[in-house]
Length: 360
Image 1 (tube, helix red, strand yellow):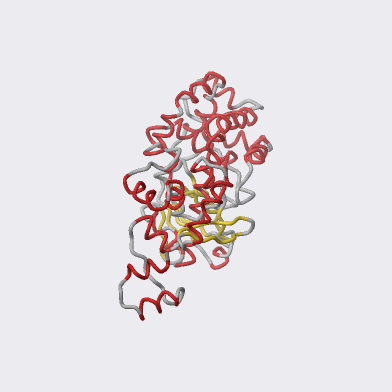
Image 2: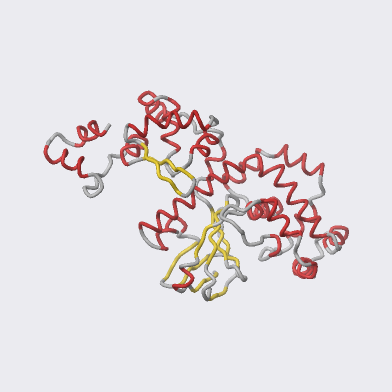
């Protein structure tokens, strides 16, 4: 278990970030160690990509990359995962940063993986110890990105952004423990200590450097702590199973909702479980952003959905009434947030159904 010791100065320097290159590296590591690192929906997703993987293998020799990432179970070169420089980093920029790594550092970190390892073929070892090894590895990462990750990246990035929004809301409603409540088996907080369950162990004082929180679609069911000049925690994002289907299945519950609101609006209401923008909804439901915007007018005017601006992005989410309609749970009324409805409930003793009807 790795423990980060957090101070108030560190708490002010917590930030979220999304790194495309880190996702590619984790995917490559999982391909190199499928039995140990690929489980559940990720394994099912990779099985669907078999034809793409075979095409990539015919076009590229991935042995240097896969051998490097599987040489040790407790370490792989740090230069492959540069700290994200933006909230959503650009993959080309990150690959350029990998290529710009000093040759001495590249050979030192590759050596930590290869020294004493006789299982790696001699010609692969020679490629990894060559002067152009960094360019070779970054080119293989770029090929994996183009062939496997890039086609689904918009939806995958939407998923990671929704996870960040969910955890930010949990933090606002509770505290740091609330933000990781659904990851209790992997990440826990005890006073000033943030504990991450992983294979290595140690206690590290952040000392004002803060912590970068990086959700990942390829790390489940693990979490990892990175201990360097830019400490980071990588954890499994919520909702990975949604990537297995192009659209949500129209089960019996969805069909009932569709009879009331229409099929498209029913799918939109179901998809608004977490805040999302119109482009994200459009990708998820395979419709145009304009079509989604038109269909959102009715849920908004009926009190089923609301919107909020975050920077340049407008996010839509279900209201309490929309939640009740989508999942069949009677909404709780907060008198402070909705006094008009509370007054209606108090003065007209006809039960919750009439109050819902009036809001509708």
